[in-house]
Length: 480
Image (cartoon, rainbow, N blue to C red; front, top):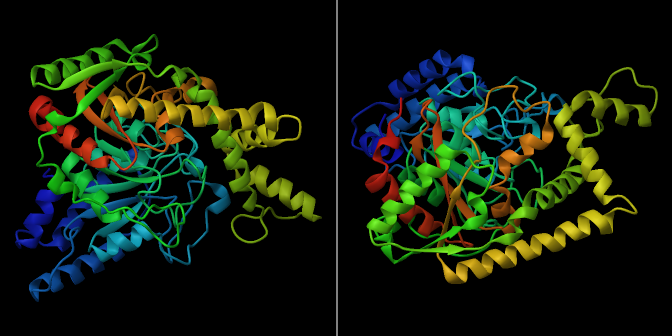
């Protein structure tokens, strides 16, 4: 399949009808139903919007930068008058009364949203197995997980069911599934993309971001969704660069750091080899590379799972059966309604994280756990700030292993949490990072490499990622 940028250009030039393309994509979604990537598919609505856009093109009207493109949206991002379930029983029938800002921007740019994708319940998971609507499967090997929590969006891109997709990333939920499925995924800087309309998990860590087949696709999509939003006070009013223009700049002026802590025991040998092959090629191309140290990496998982669960326990307190969502039946008093609604409405992993978060915030433990985690988080951010005074970009693995088998880690939460060991620091520090597919294992499973940059340095990620993709690892761009 062509990249999103190419398809947009072809559509503007009149080389295909969007109405025909929609039918092709709907057929592909039906053919891949067993992967369980979508929770909802907007077939009739997509057909109607395609006819409208085709008619506008025939009348010679100007078209937005997403015209001709089919887009999937993770089902924790709200779309007006449509269900937003967060893959949870407790929100199974919730219809949003408004659009998320990112959805408004997609529609303004003439993108066509074809449906909502599956995820770990409330975005809590690393495998998209914790969904009320069933597990999503990896299109490369359906017996393996696609990663999580944005597994449905990654699968939609990898299996050719959409041109672009939106996910959310709280501790690696875009980059990890992108790595497992062999696609490109960006976690933008905290404050680069509005979170208005994203159902909150951990508000100081959550960030909406894009998936695509190529770096160019992700750069195109990021330019559309980025920018300040008066409805989200955490967005930063900095100018959004023309990321596509930035791709044309030679990245050899960038100094690349290799953090030793990310290449220690526990990293799969094939992943290590693939990354160092790219590093060696970058040396041959004249890049400056430096080994650096990030010793606080050892504390990242513990810090993350205290901060994230504490915020989750607070954010999810609103699901009580009173105002919206699922309510337990046959209750005798308010206390029983709260207890049964939350017990029956939430899945096991969500309840585990709520209880962890409630514990670390409780009297007698707040100072020992939550306050200490926030202090370490600040130290981790300071450590990254110091690193980015020495180098422009860090190269690390995205995941410690390739995609694991379905069910393999469900009974061992700690092993599941360690899947995020290379990604959570980015969220704790508020910086940006990109997953780039670079190779396949001997079994044919995708290998991802992570590029990290300082706050609002997405342009540097795109420049280097585009160079690696085109010059050093072109075979990874093969798609269905």
